[in-house]
Length: 100
Image (cartoon, rainbow, N blue to C red; front, side, top):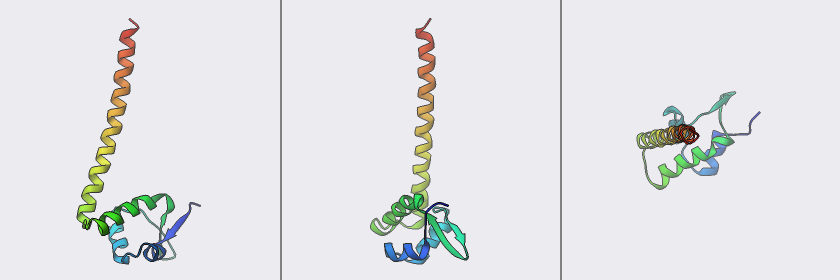
């Protein structure tokens, strides 16, 4: 089983409102696991949680803004990956023509 931390522990550690955590989940910005009515996030998802928490509390970005920024960053990463894939294909085609 993967390591995880409960919502209640996160609220205490990061000194945030429990409603903020729940809103991140409601907006689809945070993946959770639920067991015996306790909500958890996996340790591997902590960087996402910390990033969103910092943006919200330090930069005062509201939840719709977090959703937009997160979506734009995800799309940028997808485009970067597609660009890398296309560059590999272009390189392979170029290599074929060099052999001729």
